[in-house]
Length: 521
Ligand SMILES: Nc1ncnc2c1ncn2[C@@H]1O[C@H](COP(=O)(O)OP(=O)(O)OP(=O)(O)O)[C@@H](O)[C@H]1O
Image (cartoon, rainbow, N blue to C red):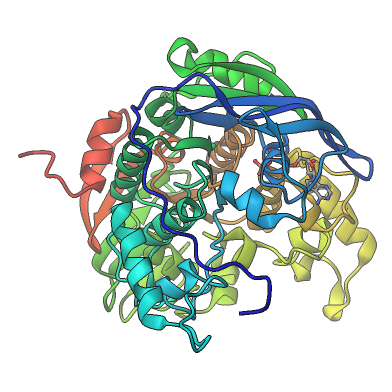
């Protein structure tokens, strides 16, 4: 240990007060202004979070939520305004230990080091030292075990952190935050990568911790989660505070209206099907199988039809969709796109056969962040840009400008790098690319993950339009809102298609089928 570094904190015991809010602000931010060059990310924004509550912060992409988190966690200082914890001014930015004792944020992207064990991650930089000033690994392990059991986290401290699943990783990060003394935890889209059962476990854990006196700020684009787990909600729009209200007293339509600034449109399941039975199918999948992932998968997507492929995280739905577009190869069976059999495992072959796709992880597979919108959106259509492999810039920009208009991408122009766009607009670029070559088959994997309520409506509306023009659509997702407009939904469970559900389903039926419950029992 370097001189001056702290030794390990004792594990603070959970407070023994009730679940209800004590009414005192655990954190308060007022008059917060934060500018990034010409962008005003927060414009006089405020939030008050009282001890014991689970407080939701919602708003469209770019509303200023992440910027507020960085101000509340001391990663950035506001240009104006003030943050207090329990009535006292926030620590200096450099005093990281003081911040850690007040607040922690569990991000979507892990902050733990995969090559170290859980114990090492928990007590990194604050090891026990014996008289010889050597690290006492037994001590570290013991303290880690103590900490994990204090907060009922069922993980072996000796496990390499890289082996943890998302759910375990989040629990470990929460325990680490608590071990520094923080009783206020920010969860930034914690359910984004979890399936239904894991979300329920996370919510149970949040409720337990609430009872033990922990206060949460919960950021999510899933409004049903806000209604399920939160007592208070604050809405930000265009860098400003719009409303703070008890969740129970705020109808969903009013919440959406506060987020969007307009009355909410209802997405219904009543769209007439645009399936064209006279045209050849857009996709035929026959006895597709891949060791360990899925097996015996057979289905068709007709021209103009929208078919959902639903299922929990390990159901195989994503893998099947990825096989269709050539991101992986099956071990048995075959895939036919618009009557052609592309070479298995080849994305270019699938695209050439007439597929367009929106991949699961837009950050890794969807776009090249530092490349311009124009280059990203036209990446899959070089043949339309110029002859002999030469890119015609004028044509590229015209094509890209058409896409920017068509998908209402908010940007100053096609030259902006995609990394400069908000989540919803980044996803529109990915969609623009998927549609660039007028595909016969459009495959979408979790197309609205991390996308705000209005961009979601817009993207799903585009999918409907695309189907109406005769394109077959396959949507692999566990988001009910993505699946509502499907003509039918195939449900996968443990690698097999177990149900086919026609349009007009009730949420609980689809959820039950995804959890593997027999609907006919
Ligand atoms: N480091 C930065 N540099 C420049 N602009 C930024 C920076 N961070 C945020 N912004 C801009 O500030 C505004 C608010 O962004 P912020 O990330 O806080 O929104 P958000 O509500 O968290 O959105 P999302 O739901 O997409 O995560 C956006 O216009 C964003 O582009």
